[in-house]
Length: 232
Length: 232
DNA sequence: CGATGTGAAGACTTTCACAGCA
DNA sequence: TGCTGTGAAAGTCTTCACATCG
Image 1: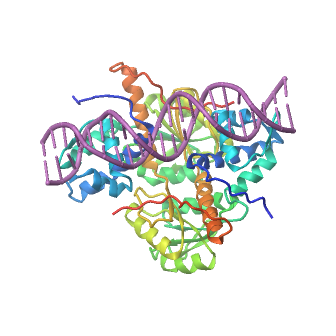
Image 2: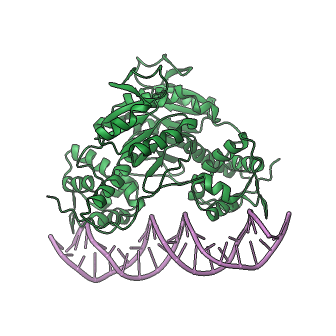
Image 3: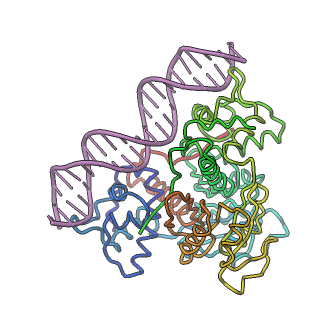
């Protein structure tokens, strides 16, 4: 019953920004705003207005010339494009420090990603309850993934166990993995992996810090400025 | 006492990959490997060998033709380039669910980012101890940042409080922020922000899932395959 | 008139392909 | 000989600038 355009492929860079726009559109909508121009959205997202228009043009022509974008309609369209018109169950592998934090966080359910199960190999963790979810043994993963039609898995294990976790997820039928371990996961073609690594993020930041120090010390003239963001 | 070349600016894309190479080089080094070719590194990082060579060429010419790269030396050079030749103290703002997980995680200290302080406005959280660190009131932030020369701040607050946290960090003198809240932070030029948003990551994954479903349903022919990674 | 949607230009990134050196 | 280091080509992403339309 939806326009279901499924036009040309959306560039990765755009896909990565759509959730950001969506977030802020939802926020403005909650504040009672009904219309926003690309300039407005750009300011809120700390990007260039032309980029906003290009990005939005990939999902369709939903703006009104001379006016802007209807917030509610745009939220609907972006949501549909991101596959948010239904819930996506996720499983979390690893019930340690991070796994517990993720499970207890609640953000999964709120955002439409209910936690179908949490798994660990450690027998002492099995059957404990984290964030309302009872931890199961990793061997039960295939059953849960199949029964609950899970297609997204979260790897929250120590680095050493991450590849095994990923292998098990893939074997169970999961095709998207959010990896919090500091390892490059090897997965078959057709499986999407996104890695979020605290260490990597910190090192990118310290690289910039180190440049700033070098610049300030005046040892070398450094012409360019570090990246930053500004918004309204 | 270091070669301190400070050559041409390193591209952002490369800066984001250097920590990944570093991680895996350290791992191989621990396993006793002393030499690796660009091809080897590429396989481990699931990227193209030419990219590895280009990336490494930005930090200097540290390879040996016909042989490859000396792992230990390369680790040293990448570390230096990323500013890892000394420790960078960090402060964590927000002692809630996530803040506690980060504080207790220990990964900060291991990687050379000791936690100089953890802060919250909630009086009931102040003076509790998280991961060996006593939570202080947010008003004490400037003192700690100044005294311990902190230049990196972590925002682990709810979205509503994140901008205030960022403002306080910047006012205190922090110039790099790792933001875990679902908001686009507004900071002055010269301050680097990196945002890690669970919701954004999940939505990017569900976009790919949704495409796969559309493709499988056969409703529309979808020619291209979702991104993936493969390594040895 | 004002803001969208978009070709075209420009910037950045990746990949190729091979000269050059150990 | 084998693998690095790098110009040059190809590909992707961003930004400009303006025709177009509500």
